[in-house]
Image (cartoon, rainbow, N blue to C red; front, side, top):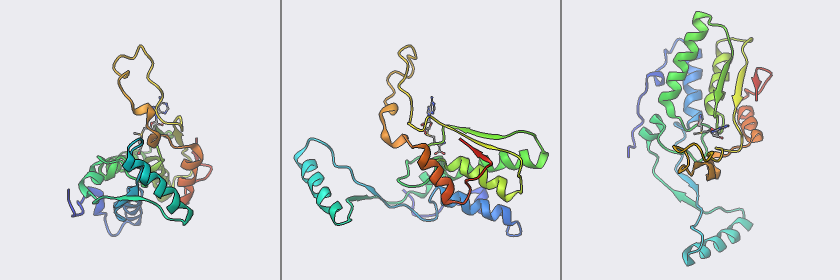
Length: 198
Ligand SMILES: C[S@@+](CC[C@H](N)C(=O)[O-])C[C@H]1O[C@@H](n2cnc3c(N)ncnc32)[C@H](O)[C@@H]1O
């Protein structure tokens, strides 16, 4: 667990390049690296007496506009390397993979490689929001950013996929983010427009 902010390649952008500065801030906002999430909604375990009491308390609190939350220390390294599941950030892949994405998209733009951009499996949309932000920053008005997902989480593994059958992630509601929510996340950053297709 680290309290220090871990410097990353793209966290020290060239101060004379406003595009890099925008991308840097966008990455840190999408991962909540700058805001440091330190609490998440607390879901008491079903069944136990403790859980039932807390569940009851939670209903009472909600009537007053209050929420039961769990505090946790922000782990900057985990957030940089994409090893935690953020309560509110729009991406779970972490800063370093966003750095990598930035290098790839920049390379495509600088070398004039033709074609659109796509992410398959977007969750809350953070990585693909970042790609749309890069096109805006670099003045590209021609490419479409494609946002591909079930928008319902992972599918149930097919019985013949022996390697996936034990995988319970398809039952995890946290991984299911609706199309409306992903669109709202694009909108939050002012990046929902005709260059984005779902
Ligand atoms: C680990 S999350 C992706 C994280 C995301 N790239 C980010 O930046 O945080 C996996 C996503 O893939 C989607 N997904 C997984 N398997 C899928 C499938 N077979 N068809 C459609 N969507 C799928 C899920 O709905 C979920 O949103």
